[in-house]
Length: 126
Image (tube, rainbow, N blue to C red; front, side, top):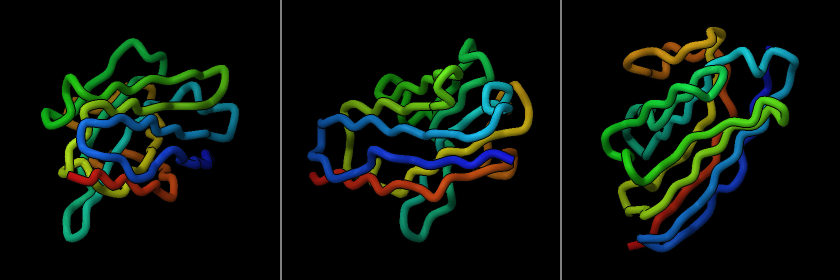
């Protein structure tokens, strides 16, 4: 079992930056692939970014490529999402997720992840 707690959300102007963090519990954190997803009102929970267990492989949704960067520190049981050049359409609740496998799915969806945090709100004002 892994418990995930997100932090770092908030209100930012368009063009600004935020860094989200996700702290995980448990000795197995370093063996799990991790992901970030987001959900805006009335929409599905959409994939944002994924990273494999070692950090050697990352993938991103097309909408955030070149602006967002996912990283992890297994010594600290954390995964982060650096978000730059934020747009109003990035506004959503952002969720951290863990997958009980080392590698990320080729086309990540919420259904391939096993543990979820409670989410953190990101609001980008235009």
